[in-house]
Image 1 (cartoon, rainbow, N blue to C red):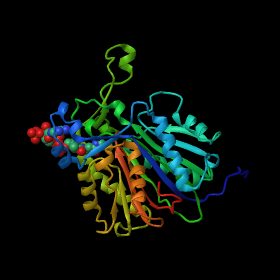
Image 2: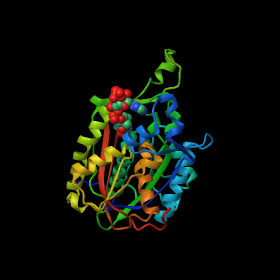
Image 3: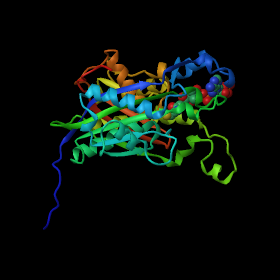
Image 4: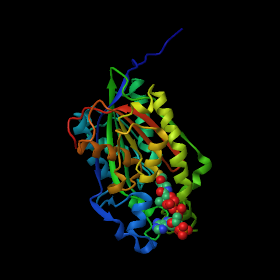
Length: 338
Ligand SMILES: CC(C)(COP(=O)(O)OP(=O)(O)OC[C@H]1O[C@@H](n2cnc3c(N)ncnc32)[C@H](O)[C@@H]1OP(=O)(O)O)[C@@H](O)C(=O)NCCC(=O)NCCS
């Protein structure tokens, strides 16, 4: 039988993680007026004290390039070594072309494969899963994964369902080949029957047919999403731990999507993690930056000296779709702490 040429399969690893946050730090008190809320309510219900938002002149591309540069420094690589760029974002303002091709060009990675994906708050873990597959199949040696959002472009200051939670930023990771497995199997999925739980007020079609030409913003059914995230998503996390051949007691670092401090606490309880497991709690200061939240939370853990290379981390993203993805990874020895 005739066989086709194929690259040798290998394992993959995260080589470095970096990120940048929007420059503006917005305290709860700046947002509570139009939504009849209070600093106390937001702190109690979400654990949030501030959120980072970008200056008007800072573009999504600027955030992506900053995060990519930080990840390159942490990984000790240059753009020229990157074979594929995957951007996860739901806030890129153009339908086409993908922002990833421009990023690849400006980072010196051309002719790297480059494409955008849309998986909202699960997007970073989706992209890490894709990068892991590309590297393990021999399709790419080094992949740049970016999760980036300017959520503030889709915020309605009078909406009390989700807008006050949202922040801007970008996080990135370089994924490369490894002699030993350092990224576990990605456990991912979706439940489109709940597509209405987190949604845009109206679609672009309304501009075309003239039925509503106001700017669309985001909304959510908060309690529905809360229950799903706090009680069903821990089962996804448990499956990712099992798929990596580990038990919850083996996890050194837990880096969940930063949606709500109470969701994070519920997850810890359901999973049965060790008392000394380091938990990312970047939500308090950065807010919910959707696809950027996990790499940004990781960046903070390194910068604050809370984690180091060789530790076993569980990361899990979940959100609009509804979509979810999780994987266990060995944290890299980074060249910089960002
Ligand atoms: C949004 C969220 C913080 C709301 O908290 P909650 O405890 O579920 O609040 P509820 O919607 O049940 O409302 C409870 C009360 O607070 C009030 N309330 C709701 N939003 C409020 C706000 N922003 N400020 C002040 N009060 C608010 C409600 O009117 C209700 O008042 P009542 O008891 O007098 O009727 C919470 O549901 C949440 O975090 N959900 C998941 C968020 C998430 O993860 N989203 C993104 C997914 S990636």
